[in-house]
Amino acid sequence: MSRILTISSEIGLTEQIASALHEAGFAISNASAGLEGLKMLGEEQFDLVIIEEPLADADAWSVCRQAHSFGSPIILLGTESQVEAWGRAEEAGFDFYFKKPFSSPGLIARIKVLLRRYSVPSRAAPAEAEVATKAEQALEAEPSPSPQQVEESVSQPRKPEVERPVGTVKQAPTLDPRTLKLLEKMLAGEYVQIAPAVNLASKIGFSYPEVSELLRTDEKETSETLESLVQHNILEKQFFETLFSCPKCESFQIQLSIRCPACHGQHLNRCPVLEHFPCGHVSPEEFFATENGYLCPKCKRALKAVGLDYRNLGIHYRCQNCGELCSSPTEEYHCLKCQAYFPKYEAREVTLYGYKFNEAERLHTEAEVKRKTVLTKCLSELGYHVTSPAKVTGKSGREHELAIYASKNSGVSAANLAIDIAYDERGVPETEVLKLYAKAFDIGAQKMILIAMPEISSDALPFADQYNVIVTQAKDLDEAAQKLPKEVT
Image 1 (cartoon, rainbow, N blue to C red):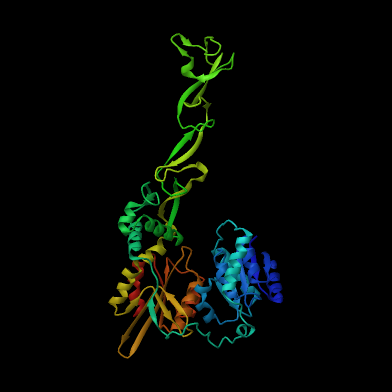
Image 2: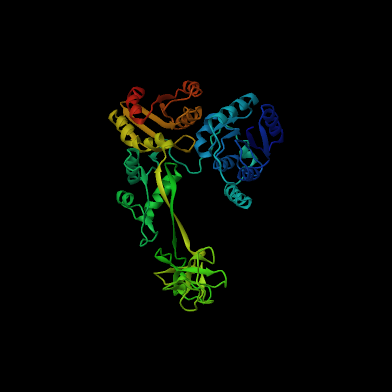
């Protein structure tokens, strides 16, 4: 049974939703405030979250942004128009938006679609105190709206925090060109596995020499770049090895040192040890050895057969200072740089990882790498001025990020294209159509093109037709570039 969390301060609406969801066979949990809902998300796992604005203690849009990080699909119930709300979809992180009032059958149908499409990733629940602290910090950062703000008419555009000229286009942040070069090689199969090379003389104890040479970065910068690609889900990392370093100077040039547990001396020798059963004497094997065989140095009896009157206790350590025998001497590390001695448990641990390309993100990564070289070239040849990725200021004052923004003047007319790229092996959903339409509407684009890789879902096609969004289906960007001229002319 799917578990659904509702975050709503309106008791009547909560009861309406809960009743409809119970009848549909869902398990329901309710939170009457934003902070309470975020704490529940941190402590339990839910298959879907419904957030309704306004909330009593926080801005519902802020709560939505925080809830998005927990990985469950989100439905937002609000008072804004569909166009204005979907224009904020990427900022807020919801998966579907309903303008109130809404129908319960429509909500149930949308929940079922999202549950079929998404699966919630498993995660370890953070400690309650940690969840509460993070949630409080997040909500304190954004003040709760006043009743006047909540009741603000949808027809009145939201005033931007910073006034920007409408239609302002600027370059959006993108991957560093050197990082793109690394990804090109990984996509081509030149780097199948990136393995660390242990280098105890370096500051971090290891390096990725081939990658460092390609990126022209030092060991630390290279490691940070690879980790950032893991955070972007482009690379996967696997455990490789654990190194230990000095807790005082952090040098990796350390060696294991042993001491006698009795006198703490370091002069220890390894030796096989025998035990004579009749008298119980235990000594190094060399003390039993004579020209005529083994003779007990204590009782002076000859040792006849192993297992009968004596046994071999294996390798022990004998202190040359006090003569103590021990099977497990005291172990500690000795730093060759600062000469410090410290117990093993105080050693600083550094985990080394190997990296490989995440094949599940191949389409997305190819788009990041090829977008400028393939699509930009195609549009430039058609006379467009291209920015990719782009940030464009809309009539609402908001900045919208697009995969590509292209414009050209042809005599008295102007042509502006808003192009986004979406990837989903199961078929690009309708949410991508709605997000592109909302952004294009706000910036006043004449044409909207959604490149769906590898294809658009059947649910999304009616939305594309209704909102005049041109859909280009392609297995990769090379195919999209071949189809693009037909769509923009």
